[in-house]
Length: 128
Image 1 (cartoon, rainbow, N blue to C red):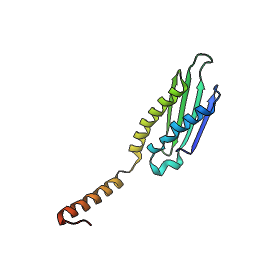
Image 2: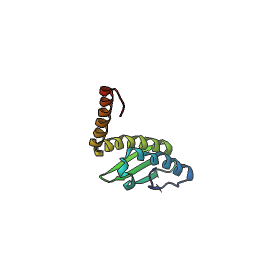
Image 3: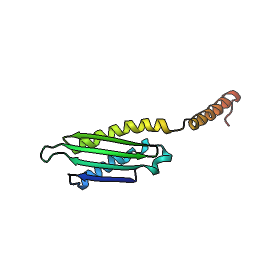
Image 4: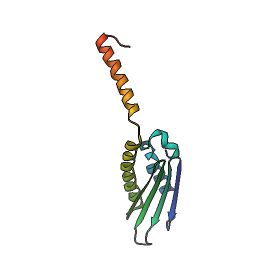
């Protein structure tokens, strides 16, 4: 769960339901951030009602990462739908970010050691 998250309303009064919903949806995106960088993540969520009575809601999320800043914005007729769409967009961008900023050599070393153990076991007929 993302620890540092600021939720604010611009021309929109926040209630507990929407705060909990945003914390649940946006907060669980930390699994798409590399583990070593999770403590440095900071999120700003801005919820806005565009025009009174027109039912246009905007959700903007600014995600501050160690090597990048990701901003996603969506406007719909339902505030909960806007949060869902923003979550999906952030998930895709964070997957790309994680792929770009994760070292793959560590994974290869683990794979090679497992293959060597497997090959030794098969060749010698015993398990190490």
